[in-house]
Image (cartoon, rainbow, N blue to C red; front, side, top):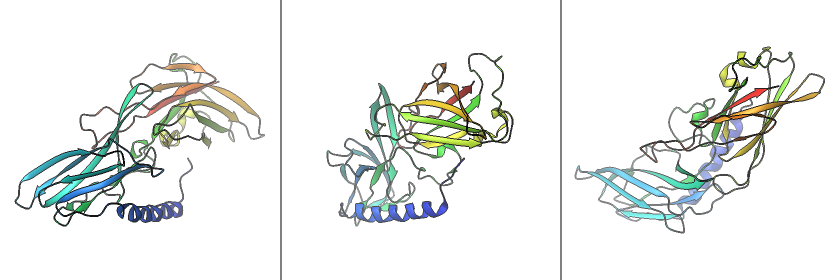
Length: 282
Protein backbone atom coordinates (compact mmCIF):
# COMPACT_ATOMS: atom_id res chain seq x y z
CA UNK A 1 0.00 0.00 0.00
CA UNK A 2 1.34 3.43 -0.85
CA UNK A 3 2.41 5.42 2.20
CA UNK A 4 2.93 9.16 2.65
CA UNK A 5 6.65 10.02 2.52
CA UNK A 6 8.08 11.17 5.84
CA UNK A 7 9.23 14.42 4.22
CA UNK A 8 5.62 15.27 3.36
CA UNK A 9 4.51 14.37 6.87
CA UNK A 10 7.17 16.66 8.29
CA UNK A 11 6.12 19.48 5.98
CA UNK A 12 2.50 18.93 6.97
CA UNK A 13 3.45 19.06 10.64
CA UNK A 14 5.27 22.35 10.07
CA UNK A 15 2.22 23.79 8.34
CA UNK A 16 0.04 22.58 11.21
CA UNK A 17 2.27 24.36 13.72
CA UNK A 18 2.08 27.56 11.69
CA UNK A 19 -1.69 27.21 11.48
CA UNK A 20 -1.82 26.49 15.21
CA UNK A 21 0.05 29.69 16.01
CA UNK A 22 -2.21 31.68 13.74
CA UNK A 23 -5.35 30.08 15.19
CA UNK A 24 -4.24 30.69 18.78
CA UNK A 25 -3.91 34.40 18.07
CA UNK A 26 -7.67 34.55 17.47
CA UNK A 27 -8.36 33.84 21.15
CA UNK A 28 -6.58 35.91 23.79
CA UNK A 29 -5.91 34.20 27.15
CA UNK A 30 -8.19 35.52 29.87
CA UNK A 31 -7.21 34.93 33.50
CA UNK A 32 -9.37 32.32 35.18
CA UNK A 33 -10.82 31.06 31.90
CA UNK A 34 -10.37 28.20 29.47
CA UNK A 35 -11.30 29.32 25.96
CA UNK A 36 -10.74 28.48 22.32
CA UNK A 37 -12.07 28.17 18.81
CA UNK A 38 -13.31 25.21 16.78
CA UNK A 39 -13.08 25.20 12.98
CA UNK A 40 -13.35 22.62 10.24
CA UNK A 41 -10.45 21.67 7.97
CA UNK A 42 -11.27 24.60 5.68
CA UNK A 43 -11.07 27.08 8.57
CA UNK A 44 -14.83 27.63 8.86
CA UNK A 45 -16.28 27.95 12.38
CA UNK A 46 -18.01 24.92 13.88
CA UNK A 47 -20.99 25.77 16.07
CA UNK A 48 -22.53 23.61 18.81
CA UNK A 49 -19.33 21.65 19.38
CA UNK A 50 -19.28 20.15 22.89
CA UNK A 51 -16.30 20.96 25.10
CA UNK A 52 -15.29 19.07 28.25
CA UNK A 53 -12.90 20.73 30.73
CA UNK A 54 -11.67 18.60 33.60
CA UNK A 55 -8.84 18.80 36.09
CA UNK A 56 -7.75 19.69 39.58
CA UNK A 57 -7.98 23.12 41.18
CA UNK A 58 -5.06 24.67 43.04
CA UNK A 59 -7.02 23.90 46.21
CA UNK A 60 -6.85 20.19 45.33
CA UNK A 61 -10.49 19.73 44.32
CA UNK A 62 -11.63 17.79 41.28
CA UNK A 63 -13.49 20.01 38.81
CA UNK A 64 -15.44 19.25 35.64
CA UNK A 65 -17.15 21.71 33.30
CA UNK A 66 -19.13 21.39 30.07
CA UNK A 67 -19.69 24.12 27.51
CA UNK A 68 -20.20 24.49 23.75
CA UNK A 69 -19.16 26.71 20.87
CA UNK A 70 -21.25 29.60 19.56
CA UNK A 71 -22.01 30.51 15.95
CA UNK A 72 -18.44 31.83 15.52
CA UNK A 73 -16.97 28.56 16.77
CA UNK A 74 -15.82 30.17 20.03
CA UNK A 75 -16.14 28.90 23.60
CA UNK A 76 -15.12 30.33 26.97
CA UNK A 77 -15.58 28.87 30.45
CA UNK A 78 -14.81 30.47 33.82
CA UNK A 79 -13.02 27.93 36.04
CA UNK A 80 -11.21 27.99 39.40
CA UNK A 81 -7.45 28.38 39.20
CA UNK A 82 -5.92 24.99 38.45
CA UNK A 83 -4.66 22.60 35.79
CA UNK A 84 -7.13 21.28 33.21
CA UNK A 85 -7.35 18.98 30.23
CA UNK A 86 -9.72 19.90 27.43
CA UNK A 87 -11.51 17.63 24.94
CA UNK A 88 -14.12 18.41 22.35
CA UNK A 89 -16.46 16.63 19.99
CA UNK A 90 -19.19 17.50 17.53
CA UNK A 91 -22.48 15.78 16.81
CA UNK A 92 -23.79 15.69 13.26
CA UNK A 93 -26.44 13.82 11.29
CA UNK A 94 -25.43 12.30 7.95
CA UNK A 95 -27.74 10.19 5.80
CA UNK A 96 -30.16 9.77 8.75
CA UNK A 97 -27.39 8.53 11.08
CA UNK A 98 -26.15 10.41 14.15
CA UNK A 99 -22.40 10.75 14.59
CA UNK A 100 -20.33 11.84 17.61
CA UNK A 101 -16.92 12.89 16.28
CA UNK A 102 -13.79 13.57 18.28
CA UNK A 103 -12.20 16.92 17.41
CA UNK A 104 -8.48 17.25 16.79
CA UNK A 105 -6.56 19.52 19.23
CA UNK A 106 -4.72 22.11 17.18
CA UNK A 107 -1.65 21.72 19.41
CA UNK A 108 -1.72 17.98 18.64
CA UNK A 109 -1.88 16.91 22.30
CA UNK A 110 -4.97 15.43 24.00
CA UNK A 111 -3.18 14.90 27.33
CA UNK A 112 -1.66 18.34 27.79
CA UNK A 113 -2.78 20.20 30.92
CA UNK A 114 -3.44 23.93 30.86
CA UNK A 115 -3.02 26.43 33.70
CA UNK A 116 -6.19 28.47 33.99
CA UNK A 117 -4.75 31.13 36.33
CA UNK A 118 -3.16 33.22 33.53
CA UNK A 119 -5.83 31.97 31.11
CA UNK A 120 -5.70 28.92 28.86
CA UNK A 121 -6.43 28.60 25.14
CA UNK A 122 -7.22 25.26 23.49
CA UNK A 123 -8.31 25.27 19.84
CA UNK A 124 -9.72 22.31 17.91
CA UNK A 125 -10.18 21.25 14.29
CA UNK A 126 -12.92 18.99 12.95
CA UNK A 127 -11.08 16.49 10.73
CA UNK A 128 -12.61 13.77 8.60
CA UNK A 129 -9.22 12.24 7.81
CA UNK A 130 -5.68 12.24 9.20
CA UNK A 131 -3.99 10.54 12.16
CA UNK A 132 -5.66 10.95 15.53
CA UNK A 133 -3.77 12.86 18.22
CA UNK A 134 -3.29 9.88 20.53
CA UNK A 135 0.14 8.54 21.46
CA UNK A 136 1.41 5.49 19.62
CA UNK A 137 -0.86 5.68 16.60
CA UNK A 138 0.06 3.16 13.89
CA UNK A 139 0.00 4.59 10.35
CA UNK A 140 -0.83 1.13 8.99
CA UNK A 141 -3.80 0.61 11.32
CA UNK A 142 -7.14 1.82 9.99
CA UNK A 143 -8.48 2.68 13.44
CA UNK A 144 -5.68 5.21 13.98
CA UNK A 145 -7.33 7.74 11.67
CA UNK A 146 -10.25 10.16 11.84
CA UNK A 147 -11.22 8.89 8.39
CA UNK A 148 -12.78 5.57 7.47
CA UNK A 149 -11.02 2.35 6.52
CA UNK A 150 -12.03 -0.69 4.52
CA UNK A 151 -10.53 -4.17 4.40
CA UNK A 152 -11.01 -6.19 1.23
CA UNK A 153 -10.89 -9.87 0.30
CA UNK A 154 -11.92 -12.22 -2.46
CA UNK A 155 -15.18 -14.17 -2.37
CA UNK A 156 -18.91 -13.88 -2.02
CA UNK A 157 -20.05 -13.14 1.55
CA UNK A 158 -23.43 -14.78 0.83
CA UNK A 159 -21.98 -18.02 -0.60
CA UNK A 160 -18.94 -19.69 0.93
CA UNK A 161 -18.74 -22.19 -1.96
CA UNK A 162 -17.73 -19.62 -4.58
CA UNK A 163 -14.23 -20.13 -6.04
CA UNK A 164 -11.43 -17.93 -4.66
CA UNK A 165 -10.35 -14.81 -6.51
CA UNK A 166 -7.15 -15.73 -8.35
CA UNK A 167 -4.97 -13.78 -10.75
CA UNK A 168 -1.59 -14.29 -12.47
CA UNK A 169 1.60 -12.64 -11.25
CA UNK A 170 1.93 -9.07 -12.51
CA UNK A 171 -1.78 -8.30 -12.21
CA UNK A 172 -2.78 -5.00 -10.63
CA UNK A 173 -5.91 -4.73 -8.51
CA UNK A 174 -7.57 -1.31 -8.79
CA UNK A 175 -10.35 -0.21 -6.44
CA UNK A 176 -12.09 3.15 -6.93
CA UNK A 177 -14.23 4.90 -4.32
CA UNK A 178 -16.33 7.70 -5.83
CA UNK A 179 -18.08 10.07 -3.38
CA UNK A 180 -21.87 9.81 -3.44
CA UNK A 181 -22.58 13.46 -2.67
CA UNK A 182 -20.95 15.72 -0.04
CA UNK A 183 -18.75 14.21 2.66
CA UNK A 184 -19.65 14.14 6.36
CA UNK A 185 -18.46 17.72 6.97
CA UNK A 186 -20.30 19.03 3.90
CA UNK A 187 -17.19 19.35 1.75
CA UNK A 188 -16.93 18.04 -1.81
CA UNK A 189 -14.99 14.81 -1.92
CA UNK A 190 -12.67 13.40 -4.55
CA UNK A 191 -12.36 9.83 -5.85
CA UNK A 192 -10.06 7.58 -3.84
CA UNK A 193 -8.13 5.13 -6.02
CA UNK A 194 -6.21 2.18 -4.59
CA UNK A 195 -3.78 0.17 -6.73
CA UNK A 196 -2.02 -2.94 -5.51
CA UNK A 197 0.16 -5.46 -7.32
CA UNK A 198 0.56 -8.80 -5.60
CA UNK A 199 2.76 -11.84 -6.19
CA UNK A 200 0.44 -14.28 -4.40
CA UNK A 201 -1.94 -16.17 -6.72
CA UNK A 202 -4.95 -15.60 -4.46
CA UNK A 203 -6.02 -12.30 -2.95
CA UNK A 204 -6.82 -13.87 0.41
CA UNK A 205 -3.21 -15.10 0.72
CA UNK A 206 -2.07 -11.47 0.91
CA UNK A 207 -1.39 -10.20 4.48
CA UNK A 208 -4.36 -8.23 5.81
CA UNK A 209 -2.53 -4.93 6.12
CA UNK A 210 -1.86 -5.04 2.39
CA UNK A 211 -5.59 -5.57 1.85
CA UNK A 212 -6.79 -2.47 3.65
CA UNK A 213 -7.41 1.10 2.50
CA UNK A 214 -6.99 3.54 5.39
CA UNK A 215 -7.56 7.25 6.06
CA UNK A 216 -10.52 7.59 3.68
CA UNK A 217 -12.27 10.98 4.12
CA UNK A 218 -15.48 10.11 5.94
CA UNK A 219 -18.44 10.01 3.58
CA UNK A 220 -20.53 7.67 1.47
CA UNK A 221 -18.98 6.14 -1.66
CA UNK A 222 -19.80 4.08 -4.73
CA UNK A 223 -17.23 1.30 -5.18
CA UNK A 224 -15.97 -0.28 -8.37
CA UNK A 225 -13.00 -2.61 -8.92
CA UNK A 226 -11.06 -4.17 -11.77
CA UNK A 227 -8.01 -6.28 -12.54
CA UNK A 228 -5.39 -5.00 -14.98
CA UNK A 229 -2.97 -7.62 -16.36
CA UNK A 230 0.67 -7.11 -17.28
CA UNK A 231 -0.31 -6.22 -20.87
CA UNK A 232 -2.72 -3.50 -19.71
CA UNK A 233 -5.96 -5.38 -20.44
CA UNK A 234 -8.59 -4.85 -17.74
CA UNK A 235 -11.54 -6.89 -16.52
CA UNK A 236 -14.20 -5.63 -14.13
CA UNK A 237 -14.92 -7.28 -10.81
CA UNK A 238 -18.16 -7.53 -8.91
CA UNK A 239 -18.10 -5.95 -5.47
CA UNK A 240 -20.06 -6.45 -2.25
CA UNK A 241 -19.85 -4.32 0.87
CA UNK A 242 -20.72 -4.69 4.53
CA UNK A 243 -20.75 -1.90 7.08
CA UNK A 244 -20.26 -2.84 10.72
CA UNK A 245 -23.44 -4.37 12.14
CA UNK A 246 -25.33 -3.99 8.84
CA UNK A 247 -26.51 -6.54 6.24
CA UNK A 248 -24.31 -7.32 3.24
CA UNK A 249 -24.92 -5.36 0.05
CA UNK A 250 -24.73 -8.26 -2.51
CA UNK A 251 -22.24 -8.59 -5.34
CA UNK A 252 -22.76 -6.19 -8.24
CA UNK A 253 -20.58 -4.11 -10.56
CA UNK A 254 -21.10 -1.15 -8.20
CA UNK A 255 -21.87 -1.16 -4.48
CA UNK A 256 -22.44 1.49 -1.80
CA UNK A 257 -19.79 1.84 0.92
CA UNK A 258 -20.55 3.58 4.21
CA UNK A 259 -18.70 4.23 7.47
CA UNK A 260 -21.13 4.07 10.36
CA UNK A 261 -20.96 5.90 13.70
CA UNK A 262 -18.74 4.32 16.31
CA UNK A 263 -20.97 3.52 19.28
CA UNK A 264 -19.47 4.65 22.57
CA UNK A 265 -20.64 5.65 26.02
CA UNK A 266 -17.83 8.24 26.26
CA UNK A 267 -18.21 10.76 23.41
CA UNK A 268 -15.16 12.91 22.84
CA UNK A 269 -12.85 10.31 24.37
CA UNK A 270 -13.35 7.53 21.84
CA UNK A 271 -15.72 8.35 19.03
CA UNK A 272 -15.77 8.52 15.26
CA UNK A 273 -16.56 5.99 12.55
CA UNK A 274 -16.25 2.24 12.16
CA UNK A 275 -14.46 0.34 9.42
CA UNK A 276 -16.22 -1.55 6.62
CA UNK A 277 -15.59 -4.69 4.57
CA UNK A 278 -15.33 -5.10 0.81
CA UNK A 279 -15.61 -8.38 -1.13
CA UNK A 280 -14.36 -8.89 -4.68
CA UNK A 281 -15.33 -11.60 -7.17
CA UNK A 282 -15.26 -12.10 -10.93
